[in-house]
Amino acid sequence: MRVPAPAFLLLLALLPLPCPRAAPMEGPLTDRELAVRYLQRYGYLTATNPGGQMELETPLKAMQKQLGLPETGELDAPTLTAMRAPRCGVPDVGGYTTFSGEPKWDHMDLTYRVVNYSPDLDDASIDDAFSRAFGVWSGVSPVTFTNKQDGNVDILIQFVSRDHGDGSPFDGESGVLAHAYSPGRSPISGDAHFDEDELWTQGGGNGISLFIVAAHEFGHSLGLGHSSTQGALMYPTYAYQANLQLNPDDVAGIQYLYGQRAGPQSDSGRLARKRGQSSQQSPLPIH
Image 1: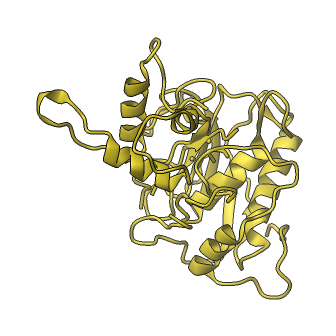
Image 2: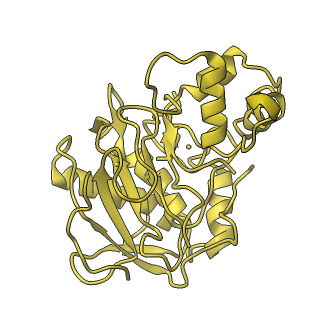
């Protein structure tokens, strides 16, 4: 099953997850134009009123509630700042959420493959970031992850850019950072795409932490939607944390789907079937 839209990560200040600009810009946008694009893209606004006028107060309040902002229904400064923050590309859906139908894997020993690598980091650093990101979830659940170099795997990971063939194009630097798909039977189920136009780093600084964004996106790959709890890893927008810790909301969500890990709960767990092809998807991309 495919996520209603891939999970794109805005940059918070998480990144998100959502992941800073909310949508591609052809030129300067008015605040209202920015708001309409954002609200439509992330599922808050789906219709127009007669004459093309859009009533924004109700969808703005829904967006503000989801992101933990004051529910004014107005385009105030905190709301516009959130709309311009980098984030995940998956539409927002409160506390922890799961995708429609609560899709989850029917086995606990998941496999993955990195299809291609970003030139921003050496291959070993990228492999380490993904391994640690999976470990965030295996540390508090019975799910394990194994990097498998051939044969079928559950999760394919790719660095791509702009239109990359899945119907959810990236928007260049900033804005949407990455997206991922929920578990299911579709060829793309569980896959995670990272925007190659971002500057991926091992930590903070001027770039985007690959580890933090990956940990968010892999939450989507496991079946989690976005959380309305600020500070949760699954909050839509991106914010760098030097020492990432799962919020209780994140833990409640993953354990709702898969149960608790046997033995001591840990933030780093042992990283213990999909398409066999390992060729790069063309061209090159969280919600």
